[in-house]
Length: 213
Image (cartoon, rainbow, N blue to C red; front, side):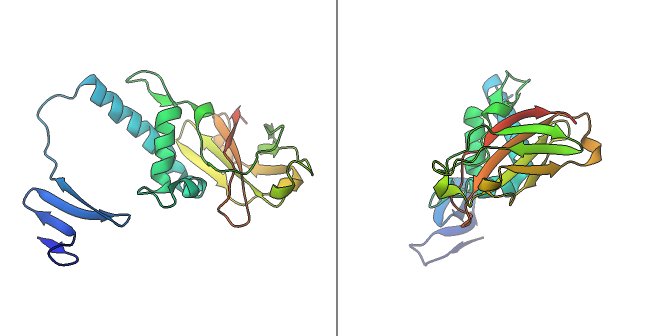
């Protein structure tokens, strides 16, 4: 059974026969009920499914990070920050042919904004973690001096991410991220971003390589 939200001229919420009405981000939509196809999927459809699966698994491992990172890109749009992040990775961060499709880590973007990134960003293994460093120029980077670093390390073998959402200030030029003992010997892909005090203005993320403890 369906419901008319605003009378006969309003949107439909629910099902009427094989038609379903729903509201997403303030806009009303209608769609027909999905039917299971008996036709074998084409290679193009299989490729699309695989690409979407790879991106979903990757982005869903770091939902808090990309929610902050793509909030500005999704503001006022009929999609979520998570959707915006997935759309970017689908276009720019995949490699290989079906069925060997995987994430192209240097092409990944986890945050998107206008804060200017610093020069000489680096990540190096140090003890039981990863040391991130960057330069700060008191003239060129003055407007963003209070921005805080955001860090993320993606563990390739287990498909999980470890993140730091509020780290050192831009002016401190370094932050250390401790890693759990069970990631030793695994591939750790490091990313760095900067975010303003208002938690809205943000930089594009930077890929800082693959590291093994």
